[in-house]
Length: 354
Image (cartoon, rainbow, N blue to C red; front, side, top):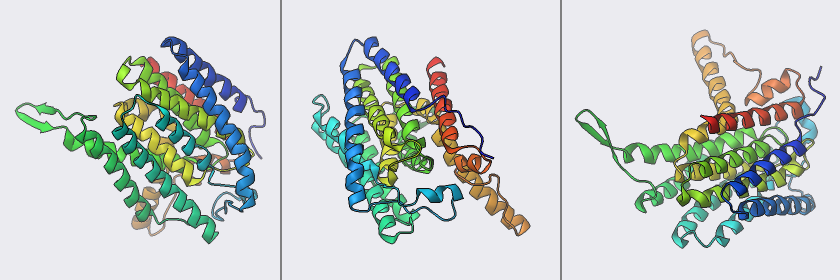
C-alpha cells in the first residue's frame, strides 16, 4: 500500500516560500537587484529547460534506470537526462557578468565549476553510451574531484582568501593551514557527492538545493559582512536556477539533472561555503544531503562488518540512499520529496535562530 496521497507542500508552495524569503532579504539590505536576479534565474532556467527537453529527446539523451533500484523506477527508463546543462551555463553567465569580482578570482572559480561540470558531463555521457548507467569509475571521479577542488583551495590560500593563523594549545602552536586546506577540499568533494547521492527521486536534489542556496544566501546577509555580499547574490541566483529546473524535474519528472547537474551544484555549495567560512551553517542547512550520504556510508560499513563477523552481510536499511528505504516501506515518491523539502526548511530556520 502506498502511503501519502495528498500533496500539501508542493512545488507551488515551495516557489512561494523561497520567493518570499528572497524578497524579504532584498528589502533587508535595500538592494532590489537580489530579487531581480532571482526572478531572472527562475524564468531563464524554466524556459531553457522547457525547450532543452526537446533538444535532448531529439538526440536520445536519456537515462537508463538501474535494475537493482526500486522496481517503481523502471517506468522512468528513457527519461531525458543531463539537465545540468540548462542550469550551470546560466550560473556561469551571471558569474562572468558581475564586475565587482576580480578577473583572477572569476577565472579560478570558473575553472573549478567547469571542472566538476566536466566530470559530471563525462560520467553522464559514458552512462548513456554504455546504456547501463555506468560512467566513470569511483576512483577516476574522485581523482578529478580532488584535482579541481585542490586547485581552487590552493588558489584561495595563496591569494589570502583563506587566512592562516596559529591555534594554541598551551605552549604548542599549530598553523591552521594544515587543517583548513584539507578540510576545505574534503568539504567541496563531500558536498558534490552528497548532492549526487540525493538525486534519486524526482525533484529531491533540485528542490533541496534551491532551499540550501536560499538559506546560505540568507545566512551570509545576516552576518553583515559586505565582503561576502556577492556570494549571497550568487546563492540566490542558484536558488532561482534550481527552482526553474524543478518546474520540469518535479514528479513525474520530464527530465533529470544527471551528474552534470548534481555534482556541479554540490561543488558550488562547497565553494561558497569555503569562501564565506560558513562551514557549520552549511553543515546544518545541508542536513538532507548529509543524511543521504551518511546512510550510504553506514549501510556499506555495517554490511562489511557483519559479513566479516558472521560470514553474511546484513543491512541497516532496506536500500540506500535513505530515500529509497522509505520508498520500499510504501511511502509515495512525491510525499517523501515533500517531507524532505520541509525538513530542509526547518533546518534553515534552526540555523538562523541559533
